Length: 551
Image (tube, rainbow, N blue to C red; front, side, top):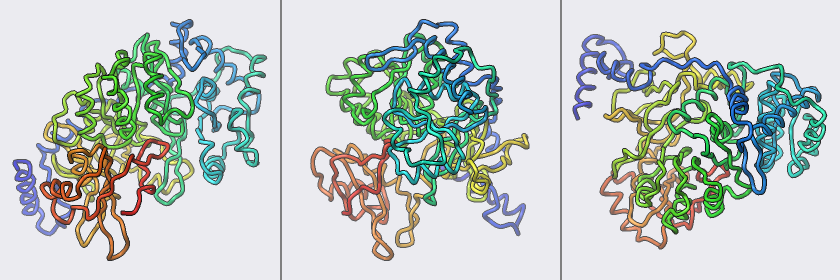
C-alpha cells in the first residue's frame, strides 16, 4: 500500500507539473524511486570486460590437466588432451574441406562425445556452429540451412540419411572426417576467433510460424560461463550432465560449463532425456554434481528420486531449473526430500544468452510464486510500461534486458531485430541496447523479480483482461494437484477458460473451484477442469499446449 500511495502522489505531482501532457506519458516513479530501481536492475555493477572465448578457456585447462577425464559416456572416456587433439584435428580437416573462418557450419548429430568434438572443432576453426535437429520436419531443416546460407553440415551415421535430398548444403560425415583427420595436424589452429565473433546461431519458434535465428557472440557466451562458475562453482572432480538437445540454448551451459576448473562432462545416451529413471541412474553412476531441468521434467525426476529418499545423489550440488515457471509445490517437495543439492531458479531467453536472472530457493517463503531473482553479472534488467517508462516497485511491466548478454540480433532479419532489440535510453553508452522479452514481471520489495507470464498470453474474455499464469499458479496450489495449466478455449462468443491438472486421482471440480474463488475474481475462475495423467511435453521439456484435450 505504501508503494501504491507513493506512485499515486508522484503521478499527481507530474499532472500538476504538466497539466496538458497525456496521462500515459507521465511517470509513476520519482527521482528517489528511480535511483532505487537503478541499484536493482544492475546499473550499479560495471559490465565485465571479456578477453577470451570459451575455447581459449578450454585449451588453457587442457594444458593444466591433460590426463584428467573430460568426457564420460557409456563405456568410454576421453581425456582433456584427447578432446583437445581431436577437436584440433577436426578444425584442420574442416579447413581442408574448404571451410573458412567466419563460415556457418551446421551440425546434426546424436548426443555423444563425437558431437562435443564436432562443436569444439567448428569453434576452433573460427566458425559459427548451427545446431539442427534431424527429427524435425524436412521443411524446417531446409529453411534453417537456406536462410543462413550454411554450405557445410556435419552428420553422423544415424543422421546423414535425413539429408540425402538436401542439395544446397554439403554434408560431411563425421566418421570420414575423423578418419581423414588422422592425417591432419593436431596442433592448435593458427586462427582464433575474437570475442565479438559469432559463437552459435540457435533457431527459436517465431510468432509468425517462421523460426528465427538468434546470433550469440563469444563474449556473451564467455560471460555466461564465467558467472555460472562464480555462482554455481564446478570444481575438479565435479561433473555436468549433458542431456539437453543442442538445438536449445540451455545445452550451451552444459557443453561449456564444465571445464573452467577441471571438471568433467557426463553424456546422457540419446533418447534417455525424457526418462527420469535413466537420468537418475546415470547421475548416480557418474556422481553428477550439476544438472539442468525444465520444471516439468524436474517434477518427474524428483518423484523418482523420492522413491529412495534421494539415496545415491549425494554428489549432486546444483539443480538448475529454467525454461518455465517453477511452481511452489515443486520447491516444497524438493525441500522435503532433504537433498544436499541447492535448487536454483534461473530465467533467460535465448536472446539474452541462456540465463539473465537467478534466484536460490533456499530463501524461498511458502505460499507465494517463486521469484526469478536478480540480474546476473553482465545483465541489466529494466521493467518498462507500455510507453517505455520505468515501472515502479510492485507495478507490472515488460522485462527488457541489456548488457553484454544481449545477442547480436536475428540472422538475416533486420526488421524483427529492429523491433525487438532497441536503443537503451537508460544507459549513457550510446551503443547500449535492450532486448524486449515480451515477459510480464514486477519488482518485489526485496529486490527480486517476479515472473507474471507472457504479455502475449494475456487473454481477453467477456471484456476482461486475464493473465493465464495467475490462474495456473492458483490451480497448482490445490490439494492433490501436482501440475497444472489454464488455457482459453473455444471461439468468438463461446470462449471459456479450462483448467488442466495432473493428480493421482480425479478431484472434485467444486473443490478446485472453491479454492480458486477464494483467491480470484469470478471471471478468472475456469468453467471446466480436466484431469490428465501427465503433461504433454515438447522436446524442449516445455508443455505442448496443442496436445491438451478439449474439455
